[in-house]
Image 1 (tube, rainbow, N blue to C red):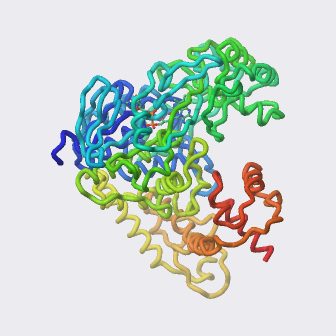
Image 2: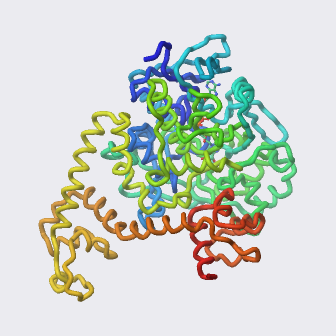
Image 3: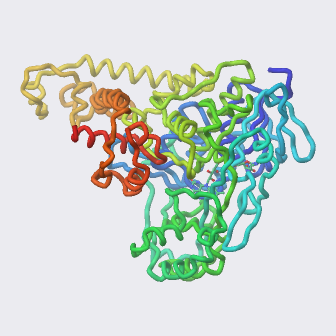
Length: 617
Ligand code: FAD
């Protein structure tokens, strides 16, 4: 420990802050979590769900580094679903709806039980910088807490302003005041700040919904936990309702657009394109006859329902009118109206890959303050910032995660190199190495790194060691068993009649093959434990693509300077979203490197463009 009261102070007990504080404490740093209220640690400000496409990968990676989010989501999950189950494992997205109260309480219990970690209630108002480095956090009530490093995770609170129609309420989220001092501090030290916005829908009283007139969506029969440490899911699993907006809904919204904070010019901040408000949907996709809405119960003993898909900043009377035109919601009671919120964020290009601010040594930023949106994005950054703050405080070298080994690395590289023009959220398409960066192999990819860093506890270490040994043992066993095509034929397997012997491991790369099926040839394989068998099946199936993927990436790097002809028509790129086509047409990049720097451009889109240019010669 340095000659300070704390090695690390984390400001903000949201999703980034909780991970940051726990990670720093796991590395042995004496850590303080300074947050407005102990009781709001782990609050989910918006939708009661964790994971999803791309986001689920981040949760699995946080878990592999012994972070909190996966275990907490398992403890609070009430509707587990594996999204994209029918597609390949690389793009499957584990998701669960969470019981809001259980999530918050489980997070609070975890934070309280963490060794080396104190929670201090207060409003962080300023930072002290001495000898060119952060040395203390100053609270609004005058307390000064000295430290070796600070992680700011203030979420949507920095000069937060709620909009409901023409009403403006200074707030960090509904019912909680904004954080005003720190924006001034950051500006004073020359950081570049921007303004973003996000929104949330009204909350409904589920006892006033006509559930018989809406569709239903159930949970997976066998829920897949997020955490490597969770054996089974204990909570009962619930169903969601599914309904749609109607032409009448659209008419009311369209007639009142000028009363929406977003369309009346009151909001300067840019909103998340991938999580549009209902006003945005009507304006941009007005021709559709309805937009789907999931009616998600917020808890097992809570009748509140979150109507996913209708976030809005329209005035209360308009919200009430349009919601009542939706089938099943004709007589619904609104418990809290929807709103938009604007807040300050720091341009993440101010950060190094360790998430330390270049201009202010010792200061780290994580979460929504860096221009991202979502609990998972926040948690993953919090983990990295917490680890690095602890290392810095103890005189260690920074840890950087690379794009080649994790979605965490993809996100931090995207943020720090490109910045954000709108709230950043994770997608599988952002990862060029996505065939190897799967949710199912997050432990194998990252737990060994976590062990080296020292952030993995003993329980996980033991379990992981057993798992790795079992994987290795099974892998080498399968590689040692071989057959000729004619021997395979006897077991009903049709291979190229080339006389070559193939290993059981190689056979697993054939479509539809499984260890179960191979046990017709080698009955002893039937005893391989199911979890191990599944992991090896996926690994073997992807092995062949991995080589191709690596070669593609090397080639793509070489081709960065490839020229795009001035007359090139981007509209011919079928497979590219209209949005990207428009962006390319508008900015007319001269070469691939320039195209790659366009905001929102994905590695997959670049590959498509390259493939087309190659055809042109
Ligand atoms: P938060 O979870 O906001 O936590 C910040 C914490 O810091 C709070 O505990 C606060 O009390 C504390 N704090 C702030 N300032 C100080 C200070 N000066 N001193 C002490 N403590 C302080 N995400 C999506 O993915 N999709 C959505 O549709 C979506 N919609 C949203 C709508 C709204 C209205 C809001 C508010 C958020 C929405 N989000 C959405 C975002 C999601 O809630 C955040 O991305 C996520 O919570 C960010 O985590 P965080 O840790 O950065 O900040």
